[in-house]
Structure formats: C-alpha cells, structure tokens
Image (cartoon, rainbow, N blue to C red):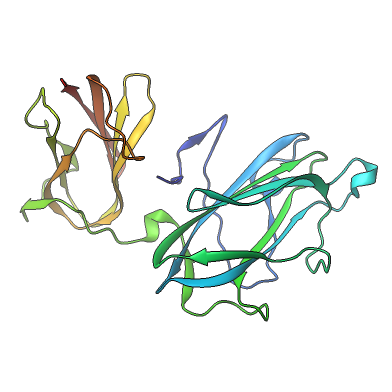
Length: 256
C-alpha cells in the first residue's frame, strides 16, 4: 500500500511534484506544503529496478538555518516499509555534505517504495535524494515513477471486453461470504484505477488494484486478508472503486 495523489494526509493531500531526474535537484517541501514551523513533511516515490541490486541512497535534507540557531531538520526514511535511516538530531542542509555517509540499500526487482519524512523547526525544509553506486553515479537500470504511472496487470479474471459507459462497481458474490468473495467492477476506458477494501471505521485494509487498467469488466478474489496478510474479523466491509473521476462503494459482510 502506498500514497496516491489526491488522498488525504492529515489536513493536507498528497500532491504530484515533477522530478527532473538528476542528482543535484532539490525539492523545496515548504514551497509544496506550506512554510510552517514545527511540522513534518512527507515525500514518496517508486524506484523501479530491473533486477535485485545493491546501491546507496545519497540523501541531503535540512534548511539553511544552522541547528545552533534554532534551525535544522530531522529525518526518517523507509524503503519497502523498512526503516533505512533515522536521525533525531537537527541537520542543516548541505547538498555535498562530506560528513554524511550514503545509506547502503538493497533494491528488489520491480517497484521499490521509498518514503521520506522530514521534520522541520524553522519554516524551510529541503530534500535531495538519489539512488547511486559506490562512485556516486546513478545506479544502472532504475527509474522513478508514481503509482498512477505504472501499468497494472489486474490479477483477476477479465470476464468481458465489453466497455461500459462509466466505471462501475458491481455487487460482490457471494455476500455474505466466508472466507473469500469475488469483487466485480467495470472500466470504461484505459486509465488510473484504484480498488480498496475498508472497514466500517474508514480504515483502508487492503489495496486490490492500483495503477493503469485497460477498459473491460473484471472479477477479483478477496481472501478476507489485509495488506499485511492477516485475516480480518467477521463484520461489515466496503469495496471502494476510484476511476475516471468516479467514486463508488459496495458493502460486504464477512461471517467467519
């Protein structure tokens, strides 16, 4: 599960920012999110690698105000859900900081989820990050993208190539169910699609589809598990489809 453009994040939403793809580029988080004191800024990207390979995360973050003058930022970085860097001490921004050692990482084949949290104290919050080799050059055979830019192969059954007038979420079957059910939906044209399962409190439990999907009618099997692989309890759940500006939901009942 990963952030999606337009999703809520506290009192803000995730926003797309163009990345030019060179190592000297600096992202001004304050300019994107608003220059406030004592807040945390988040940034996310997918790093796609054509194979498993080792590399380094070259990271620069902070602001121009020295820590001894009340400036500096703190940081935490996750790769595929695992913390690869955390520093609770304030750090002032330097793009070429000889005292900061690149972070050794291992990329898996395919998309790797890279998430940054930069906590600032004095308005400015800057971030520069790149995946490099031992010489500091960009690692071979990688590229950066957002989830909506990745084509998705829906791991379900295409039941029809018939194209509906608009995206539609159909009733799941069986319903009630134990422990599996088929979730059905139809897409009117090629484009970004997201299909999630939520509980009654509004917590997202499972992402079944996220990416670009061809037009057609689909059925996907939900096995009653969350994204971590745990069985969810008996109760009411909601399938939620987002596609082409349409938001639809259907109630489902799990009886174990």
